[in-house]
Image (cartoon, protein in one colour):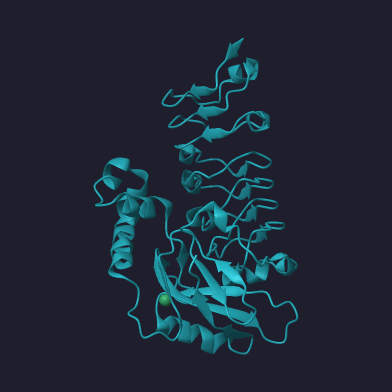
Length: 309
Ligand SMILES: [Zn+2]
């Protein structure tokens, strides 16, 4: 019988999660299984209820994995390497009460057909989502303050659950705005540094975002985001994290990547009693104007202001 709180099983060339784990007197709270050659995650591993941290970086080698069910676990963050599972069709994250957000890179996996994240602790939905995804469920995420416009087709019965007050105590640096029609406070994705109203006399997105887009363009050729030795050559840790985790959104008109600053439009449906707040992100005023001219029969814009939190 073994007893320990942290188990270091990284870099072991494991092709399976060792069954020995079942025979521990007390399941370790933290298990490192990074950079192994796991081809599947056994169901029994996810039922070991003592695990608080499961490190599966290198989970990206699961090239044949089609379904990943991490439901009902105390998982706090999702490894962005899930997005490297190039055949993943279904991702189940139900009941992850401590999960605050889903990385945009995961929500935008082109193979993903089903994304289910009911009863999580999500503070906001990933601002963009793969256009190929067929089924999205995110019921009972009670902290969410608004719905990114990309989700509208998936969320017809979900609108009324949108809350008024975000859980701002989690991080004092969260970016909050107040929409002026009903004075509701909206929480924007972590990573947001600046948002521009429409119209705005301010300049377009920052040079910093342009630089990140250029690096991401190179990423298509040499997969920078997977290689720490290349990431470490970037001038700041923040820049490294942006490239590794991906953008926080895409332009809702031209799909350009948005990292830290963007034009924001808050809209509500015309002739609707639900009053659900939708948010749209754009790379430029041009894109916002084109989008609105296509959608003005359905939505009207609502003024907003940045909250001083
Ligand atoms: Zn655009």
